[in-house]
Amino acid sequence: MSFSFYLAYFIVGYVGLVLFFYMLTPFSNKAAFVARTLAAYISLMICAIYGIFACVALRILGEQHSSQWAAGRAFKYVMGMTTGVKFEVHDPKGILDTVRPAVFIGNHQTELDLLMLGSMFPKYCSVTAKKSLKNIPFLGQFISLSGTVLIDRQNSKDARAAMAGAATLMTTRKQSVYMFPEGTRSYSDEPELLPFKKGAFHLAVQAQVPIVPVVVANYSHILNFKKWVFKSGTIPVKVLDPISTVGLRAEDVDELTRSTRELFQKEYVELTRQVQKRPIAMPASKGEDGVVHASGADATLSR
Image (tube, rainbow, N blue to C red; front, side, top):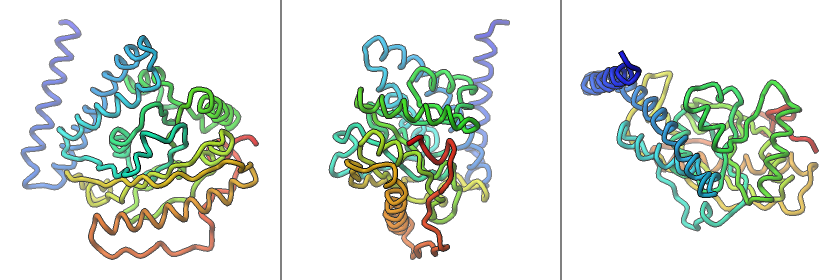
């Protein structure tokens, strides 16, 4: 039997499994969780394959650095159809289309943030990603072809070099970068930020480009792995005004990180309060400034 036969057999079986669990959703929240999780994974693989072809086509047209935008938009529409989840971007000043280059930063809640990126990702922008993601079939090929800035968390020297290369790319090609300063997913039920690592802020200062905070409301009521909850719904995303780094130096990064996180936390709570329509208190201070004061790949760049 040919490969195409086995591939068709797999696709039909996978789709049948997704539909089976969707039929059970009126009776079980766990069935809804499984159905949407399976639908999300196949949507991601489909769009990663599409992204590979998009990268090749855009390279020929001289628009390689729009490939992540193209794949992201495809993921937005495919996921909307297969899971019923969408992110609604509020950008009244058109910052995503007019501020370039910039370091865009956002809060990192779950794997669903991939869909958020697909919904708001501006053209001529690249994400940073763990180097290990290159090993995932289809997604790894897309990451390699699309110009993703890869970070080896086990090797701080290479990570810093990657960041330095990103700064040069930003200034020479007007290429923006999107980063999650928390460094990892929070999986929090409440709008509470993890401490911010300083890599994104060092990068912005090194390239002398603005920082643009992109705040996503807490969506634990839509996706919650601990409670096996995965519902359809709309999640708001708010683009804040750019924060200038012109004239700032490496010694200003700590204060820049602290003040940006403070602003971000306030907007995070307010946006979540609006969407969930319930009172939410600001997270209590633990006597820290919310900044990771450490060296290494996740925290700093070479000065």
